[in-house]
Amino acid sequence: MDASEQLEIETRIVGVLKSIFDPEIPVNIYDLGLIYSLSVDNDNIAHILMTLTAPNCPMADQMMEEIRYKVGGTRGVKDVDLKLTFSPPWDRNMLSDEAKLELGFL
Image (cartoon, rainbow, N blue to C red; front, side):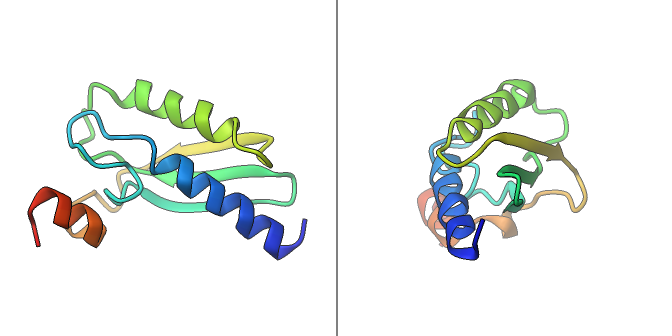
């Protein structure tokens, strides 16, 4: 896969992630800053490192399942390697400007 194809797939994945919302905050997980890294390897496996707004989020399993399902169904993606981390812990500084505006922080 060449770099432009990889970028195209990653851009589609970002679009998918922007359609998934945190159950407690009315902002998508991408603009919330929950996605720490995203890459697609030469085997078309999407590698996503993410966090949650709180380690004890009761909706974590459902949200991660939704991510696996939707990203896995994205054109050009064969499989999803989704990892959860709490280092560094999420905080409001990770919000995109769009999210800050939407939540009234700007």
